Length: 581
Image (tube, rainbow, N blue to C red):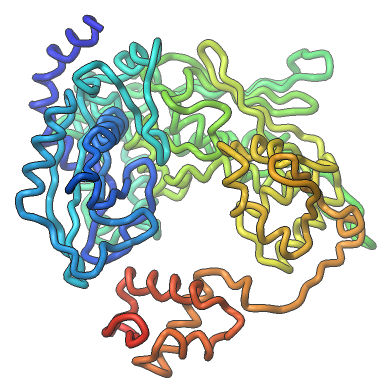
């Protein structure tokens, strides 16, 4: 522990110097009046006001969350908003002295943690505390030496050797924003800069105010330049190839094809540093002919074509390899194509807190600013949905799920080529068309269709869930529709797809609005209020479909209110709704 404390003292000055810069760009979640505060996750958590007031105050738990955020990417705690709510209770007021109390209490219980509490007011007049926690420049902990890290929506303890790994992975300045090569901001590759700017301005994920920025302003906005120098990220994305080579850790990709005897029969390398990470993704997909091979499956009088390796899966594997690799470590990315599988090998270990067993539900971005660029250019999602999408695509094609594996100094993902059950392809397509399945339901149904039966415990393990108690959102509707059958009780419950249904593709496809998707329900409510303004919730429910549960309609109305599309007056049964202008 003495070594850690020495690092605290060394990095304390750097933290104080860089804190203003950090606060300007470290937190990527915005708050606007009474809008939906977003869901709890890697950068956000909600706490009841009871956590910091009265006899129920739990300062120890609050300190743990603050330490976890500080050791990750920073984040926000919305105090005064319950977990299942988007806005604080009506007429809730915050004691003006509470922010100072929070600063003092957390200051006594944390080391290397900065907290910035502020009272905010929503459109309905209620108040809550927006507690911002910047990313700490040194390792954050409790005074008695306990460490925590934010992983997805949980604050997990860091113990044993992981403490030293946490200290080693942290630096006073992230690799992306360093300017150690002293490359002038004017020494960009004109063509690559023009391509980057055009992609940003054409993206529907970028705000209009950002699209209006000049090329030079966009360099600053995406941290591609700082002052008069290009950052490492800038050299990587818009720099010249000779400067990219000088980085030492710019990505190199090698595609190697093996035959049945594990002999190399083809090799393609992208090792001249001419391409940016964004261009590498397109080049690999375009220049490897094996990725365009397809199966031909009989489909009545026609043929159904299924790719050996789906484009979505290959691109997602490449994006993950480029966006999440440690750029402080040398090593090539390998695409090893065997007769029965594709292996993607990336140098470096997974980020701390992520394991092969929790990839499906965990979001940790090692390179925050590169991930932001990939997101804005529509190359990836920032919500950690990449593996979910791969699961969905592979299962819908009757193939096994990806197989992640972590080695001593590398991370590897294997995708199998073989289709386990060709009939699953038609089954999944028709089931989705008939019942409009959610992504979770498609994944669960695909897993069950590939196996004769899975117990509740086996299914939870396959879905990387913590317990069988959280299976409900994945399978409840499948059970109610008869797509999935069950036998037994509790953890011994066995789930399976009726073989006759799988063979005949005959579903009980009765039409009902009970399965309507949330966005479609919201559209119905908007249309109804445009014709009948100042309506009560029950009146809306009766007009758009009495078979829809009122609670479901109420949730949709609350979401529209949070998005400022619907206004209201009154309370409980006397509440009336109308469209905002």
